[in-house]
Image 1: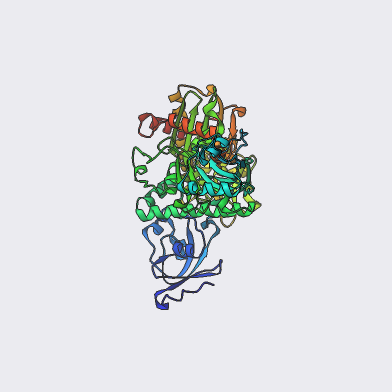
Image 2 (image 1 turned 90 degrees about the vertical axis):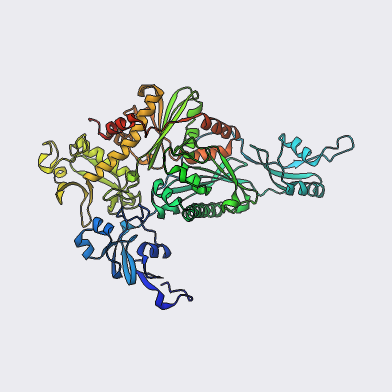
Length: 617
């Protein structure tokens, strides 16, 4: 049990006891349950950024608490409130209280896609180290020490005054045997080591997503991934989507908190991979980062005000290189953070990394890449022309705003098949406690085919169901509080699909499908012109293509044209480390790609309305 700190007077604190976790946290009166939980190390599901609007952080509390807020009255029924149900982000401890945290209110570690489709590349790494045995200057060839290095490496070097001062000593004390570590893309000398020494040279590729962060430790000498790790993005406490993060980042304090959260998450991953690989942090010379526009601004602690309103202008689009120490990363003293380039608007470096990974920028045939997530991003084109766009799909694919929605964690329904009855797969083979994004897409696709939902998205009432609906399936269509629900899993806490859930999915899939259609129209091509349709992202890899096509999330295409490329953003970040030519290509095609902002156009509203409908079977 935790105790109050010695310098806190007993009369100024109250005790918040978390029953199941067996933790007591002593806080000032007026502290919310969510704030006390964070101090106690309990991670709650705060999808709305503690605005009291999502209802995901419901807990049971007893003791001296603040009166129910309007948000709680609106989201929690009278019976539930009488039983002690409260929103953790709103309810304040005014005296000692006891709290029971339900499993669905916690932010459980999810299934995270740490890998992408393997890509073979000719090794030409950004960070290089070579053991050199130089010939000492003579009267006939009295070139400078730096020139000796440049001749041997075949590259012009940029040297700090520190290395200029260090070079003559190292050369002459080691009989002109030296091992320089340098960046091949700009010639910056990073380290001068004794010729016999070889501590290894490493870099880390990161994909920083709104929800999850993945890091891959790369041996730059051999071009091998030697460790990979992932963590939840610690910014989740400020909301689950970029809109919530941007709102928080509009103040100097909020921007600093968001920056500190993402760097803390990344540093945790660095600790994990260096421990796995048994190397020192100081042997890491570069961190390459792919991420959406908002994440990169927050990482670099760049104001996000311009992203909060039309025309959603980023402060920067070109790749940025910043001393790692300035951002709070403890790697080699000369190490840097390299953020991949952005196209524009909300089409960020995660998309450009996906484009690089797919190779679409260098092909003659036309490819389409879509990253299905909270912020849907897409690109279409080939080596001659590239168009991109984005649309706020909302958090439905992450399980937020869904009545029984949750992330892809143990207990989440991830697969649904409807035949004579409903058959489900649950992550971890646990009892079902909710449904994640892939399960939601499956469920609604199957409900459409079964005749439980119409093409407009209306849930059919029990007495209006088609006669062909099997009896066991029919029995799952129920009326609760005057509204139609479909029961996927019964029990004390049933997992259901509501009419509102269907509408939320329609909004999400409508946003993504509309930019797909508008990009194809802007490119003046039809579906038959596409050589390959790539689906990228951690979430995309878990959905069934037939379900995605059934609900109209993606167009109906031959299966051989649809390819899932996993965490392509991470692969793109790795490629930017392993190949200087590919890094140069990345910077070039990102600059020439044209970002299309469809949101303000009349045709977007038409396309969006059409895309919300479900296709006929």
